[in-house]
Image 1: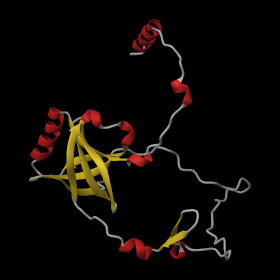
Image 2 (image 1 turned 180 degrees about the vertical axis):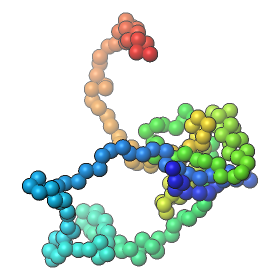
Image 3 (image 1 turned 90 degrees about the vertical axis):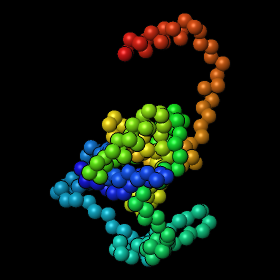
Image 4 (image 1 turned 135 degrees about the vertical axis):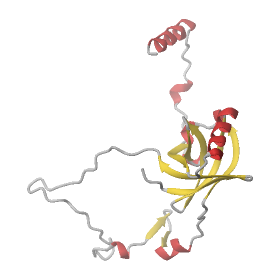
Length: 198
């Protein structure tokens, strides 16, 4: 494994040097399309819908459409944006483990201690376990600042990035509010069935 980030967990006067590694990898097969007649690879060209010309990546900018207006953002615009290049994982607060809803969790990363004496890493790990707490942290990975949680995972510390609240869809399925009655006997039988799978 190769580290994707090196820095420190920082809170108060405590500084825990760490390396960050992606905790997951995809095993999906990467396929491409070929011509069924001769096996030649199918390529997609980028064409401008106004002039019809083929466009190289060097001449492509990005745009945002809100339905009425289009805002074009150039590479210079992106470079001019202020970026947080912090080498710290800033601890914002500690919360009980059961206050983290799993639906909010995104990508997971393992943390490895980088100092020759990993005492501060081990102390933070043990403290999180003893107090049954999770840290809410701020981290900048690949120029993108995100909120994440810092928690224990076996003998390691782990970070999991968080989704924003407005990324979780609101749903209200009508069938859930039906007047179906569940009897005590049905609940007992269901519990027995669950136990039989343990």
